[in-house]
Image (cartoon, rainbow over all chains, first blue to last red; front, side, top):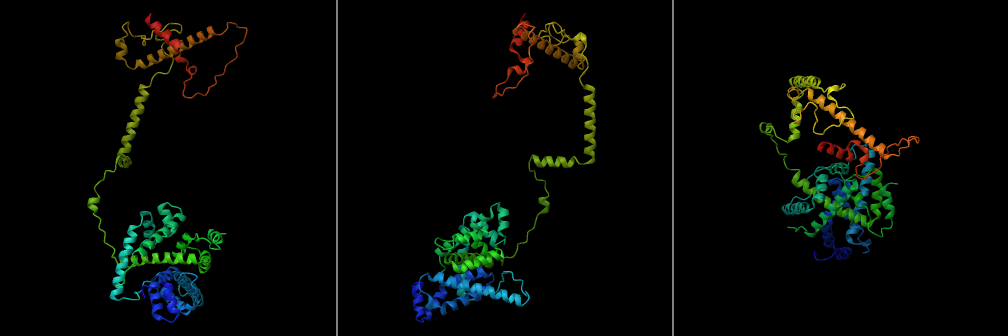
Length: 191
Length: 245
């Protein structure tokens, strides 16, 4: 099953092969979760949205016509799911007279899986990320650290480094791109 | 129309990859305005390439976020102790710092009083030793038409050119004498220059010579000799000839 391509897995899943769809989920769960986290800003919301996105994908397997890659198809479903979640949150906030401030606040809660294998996988991933960040050119690493570790705004980074705002944004974008390439080059081996 | 809207219009048909990379990160880190965010989300729902780019950026960002959360956040903030006793030792940071220290000292009352005393003393000495600016003693001034030997700078000097004991003993007298002689010398030079000019001009007094205004001609580094009458070469040779005689 692991040797099959995404498209082959989808073909199998369309014929009601649940293992095939399980493999798709396993391959893409982290990336879809990351996308949802990027859009929603909260881990618990992102997890719910990712779950909803995979359910929606399973329900719409027959609509996948192979015009786009499976990844793009999943991304689109996840984006739509996140937009639905946001709209729902907005309506709920208005109904409950802003019982939450509506800000995209990060909430740290316990990880979904906390098994020894998942811990080992995470440790390995952390090691890879550390190496990938360390291998970035200084100017790119600088903006990543300022943004993620110091939680500075783009304007603050721009003022600190005396760079145009657009340069800061493009540097961060390039840094994320390079990180992604380095991380994809060395996939994490699941224990 | 905002930049974001313009970019979106330019990439409406997505023939090429969207140039919204910078907006993707701005959206990812929640730094778009509500209007821009809404526009970007509408675009994201329609643009496949942007969706893929956004997913990839989110993934990379989440890796860093997770690493930060797992490895950095649990770290206890280290307790920093500063050795104040050692840090209190003066550090020589160069002449500028030394100047700062000096200026700090200069603010003390003793330093101000000392400075005042020095200034007053200087003022008094300047007033006392100030050179005489009145009419020079006629006995010590050579007549304009009298030839002044270059060696005989001081009229009171003997034939050997050595100052008389009176002049050496009385140093206050020297500046006045020297100044008077220099003034005389300049007058002589001016007179000679006028004579030379008169010789070179036509001797027709009936024709009025128009006043020639000196116009400073622009020159690139060359010194205009006619600007300084005291440096005429002919006069200098005259003087040297006079000395040799």
